[in-house]
Length: 173
Image (cartoon, rainbow, N blue to C red; front, side):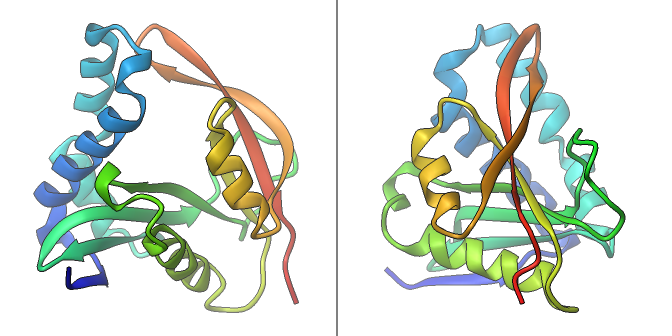
């Protein structure tokens, strides 16, 4: 395997949309009625929505590629989580997904660290992550980087409402 991480650009919108759909479905698809899952995927991972995010200067997305084929991605930008202590200038890891065959290989950590470096490119700042309440592996992973649970909210997938935890790490100096 020749794995590499690169920053995605607007031309990658279709690749990102397909990868995000695949990885979300692999990870969480079994939790939802098909109608709810399909409605969520069509909205959340639409190609045009990917183009808009990829073109926006306040957001960044990276692709993990195996010989040029996208197998994982991370997305970061300004914090949009519903927590009363979110402040202007706070950053958020918005997504971190790898195709199942690439999980637990160390590349998720590298992808995450790439996003953290970008989020803190102008210096330390408070960072946030939303994570499914029953995704214990992800919670342990983020805890190793100093993220702690500070709240919760409901994440809609069609008619289903998932309990999500809000994690935060204060600026690390």
